Length: 133
Image 1 (cartoon, rainbow, N blue to C red):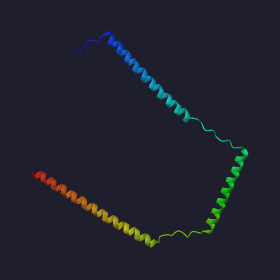
Image 2 (cartoon, helix red, strand yellow):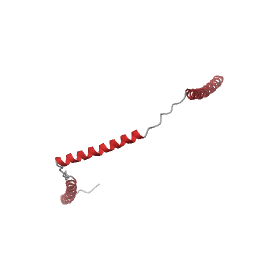
Image 3 (cartoon, rainbow, N blue to C red):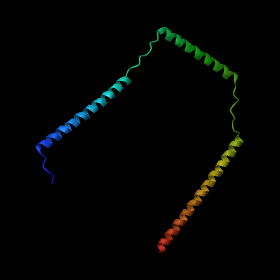
Image 4 (tube, rainbow, N blue to C red):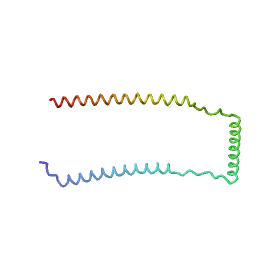
């Protein structure tokens, strides 16, 4: 059994733990202070430049001029370059494609039917073996 602790030992233990608690609290306070300083430095708002109305007007006019030159140039380029007409498939070519597609699908359906018949045959054989046993 554990020995009974005397009043003096308990008082000394309490004092020691309180001292540890104070040291831990001071360390936590230091860390929080460091954290607050970092946030304060990061949250400094940046000042926006003020641009006068006259400057904004000049900028808008310059941008409109740039867009006008780009649009004018693109219209001149598109009108100078005429694209060839789109190619169309002939009726004969279309019929050949349709026939080939139908042939492929017929082969695919025949393979599926063959596989289905083989599976049914296997099932019938298994059922017959189970009945015989």
